[in-house]
Length: 459
Image (tube, rainbow, N blue to C red; front, side, top):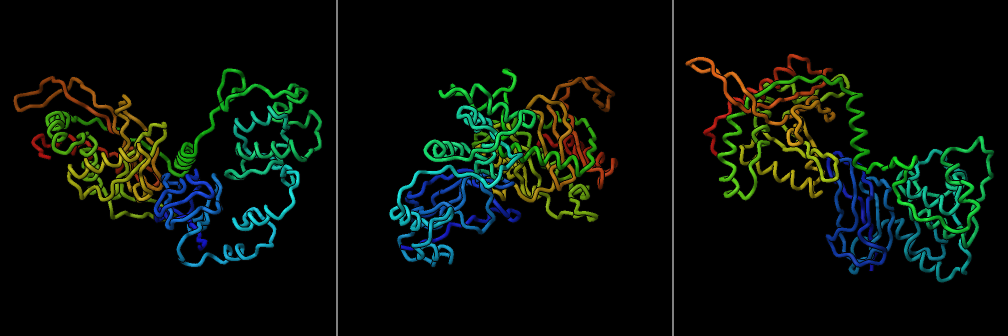
């Protein structure tokens, strides 16, 4: 038997930490080697972390919501064989059986102290001073109201969530100990000093009634009509990045309309053949990627990033594609070296990344090192868009819906009126380093490549 540490793995070149989302195993569970033990979120993607050693999960060192640096221990596993020795901290905690149990004490310490220590009435843990300004979820606020816990007392409850937030487990544990033991009794403040939330939490109806209040849904309403919905982790991340991008880069957008009739007719002719041969759909996206990659090679100063007063010119052309998830959130996987792929390779890569994105199976590497981004707003019925740049890139292209329009067709015999398929391209760029001439010429070149598409192309 030996105790080994399970470490937070490195999940990408730029990933330095991860947030524990969910433990898939409980203390005492048997774990097989390479079996998923917990779910971790990074600023790139959510992923499952497998165990590198099989054995029994003896201790969890990082709780759900904790942010853990790469290389730090998240759990202790007891193995059946004799692997490498555990860290000095683990070894010391295993040998020192007389040491009182602490929050981070080893599994052996806890067992010995629980057996030898006399049973005492539990006492509700409290912080040394109120932690004001902390965010409370609607669920925690509902439980506090039902149990008659005023805001000043709630501010004393220790939290194990992200940034010290109080979780449902925290408040229920506090209430259990509060009933059977003692709890902090904060000094009441005058009504003029009470906050609006405190007034709600300590309302007379709650304080004078001993019976528990009826169950309330976690999503509460302030006025009886409005619903409060807390952002999930990904939406908070998207919100922050969008605000940062608008703050960092002055956004300018240029628009060009492209005649994509040849592309539409070619795809209609080839999609069934491709489906039968490859077993997957042929979309317009790989054709758009090919045109953008060609245009980037013509205008390499679009394929750059900004670092202070320096411009970094990228050698590789790595194009990201914005993918809408079933949750309503957005993620941007990247096709590396898109200029080196043919239409078949681009089609397979596009389908693979889109499918894995919707199944939450992307890896951090799938989202890293993008140099330019494409956002397709056409499937939502939008004819154009003004997308926000993905930092630290300097450009993003929005593809509008393809619409039939009457158009003047120039022929050797003269001009004719005909029905053509048109699409609007919207190019948003960082005006710090991309001027209107470069930004406009680039998107015009993309449109020229699309209009020059050979209808006899084989795939």
